[in-house]
Length: 348
Image (cartoon, rainbow, N blue to C red; front, top):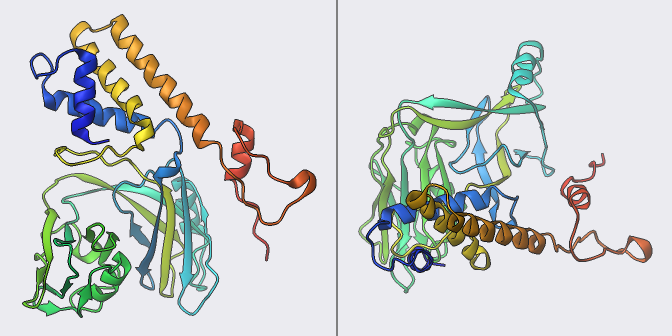
């Protein structure tokens, strides 16, 4: 559902079709709050996200997480060292336990046995720039960053392919950029400048003279957000070999302050629950506490309950089974759902 459609539906429930008592910006904020509140109700399948192909150089102790990682809800980390085929899965520990391990555990194996996640304040934000295919026709382009050019890209390039080309430049380290989004032609590719290029206003990427149907733009200017808090992983012990990282997590929903053409970050079948929450929130402004607000919040609660039942009608896929081990489909209670979410112990 578009934000504009959600606004119209909210105004219809408020019986104020034109902005008067409730301003559009107020209702958009209420809708964003509904999107955030709905996302916190459950570990919804549409919020499960994977970030892969993140390079990490030897002797690295920390890795900044990208924005939107709700690591307190679900986080799983895998490391694949250069020359290895099987990924390693270090144990996640509490920051206090991680500090103890750093003081007492030493090894030259190059393989972190544990990690913990912490937050740190920064003087400025990491800069984010975007690459977008602007036309329906295929486009080719090359990127110039601070006087150096990459190889040629084409429509359909993935974020991993863009990242792989950027780190070939001598002025960008192997862990100084992280790309996500894409593939180009379907969605923009976002380039996050981090580590040695983080918290700074870096040069803007430009396109070479032969680029067609492409554009680049600065999304977040580096160094502009004083005191921003970012989340990071600390490895115990630090690795001594290059590796590639993949992590799976529950992401935070995307909200917007420019809702003209944006969609709610909620599946359409659940969007009316967000509208009900926004309407109830708006009624509280008028009446502080009222039956109208309670009715809308009750509709929101019903939408959440229906959504939970629908999302738990999953099909367990555990290979070939028969007899009493054959999977049963339908609604899963909390205990069964937890059993399916916790993976079995890996063998040797």
